[in-house]
Image 1: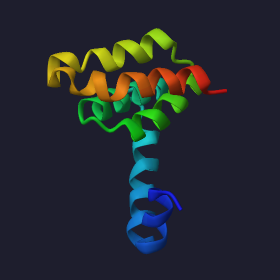
Image 2: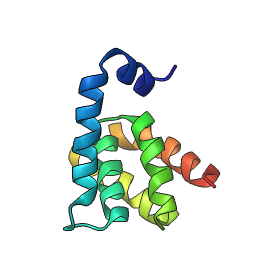
Image 3: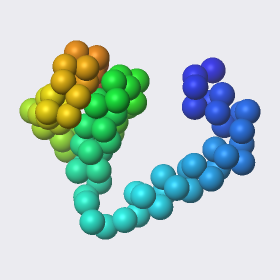
Length: 101
């Protein structure tokens, strides 16, 4: 069981509320879906969350993001948190992109 499944099983009401929040964020119109995924990748990279980066890269690629857009999104975190995001997330991001169908 992965961490999301554990969350859903152990806290179903909270998971349902979280899903509602995500649905509400998806429905906003200020940014297109691809740009939202790139923002998530940048934020998660700055936090060093390679697992989240992996999944958001796959979603971004499905929405038309290029490999260079993914790479630049991770690299821009250098100005925010130094090497942490790049060293912990760039390999994962590029691997996810290269292997996503």
